[in-house]
Length: 78
Image (cartoon, rainbow, N blue to C red; front, side):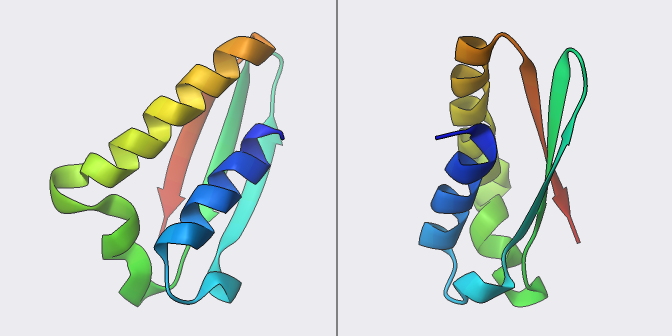
């Protein structure tokens, strides 16, 4: 499972309308940027109270990226 699939799995598990989840991956030499778009009404579920859910997803992504030797960054796009 790559990082894009990992974020997709976590995100689709959190939201009600999984069809609205869009994930794109921009890969550089040292860094992988994962852009996440969800429906506007689902944004609160992804960010969570005080950003805790988003931070948890970023932590998991960071741990997975160490294995690949690259830095991963999660961008939540409105």
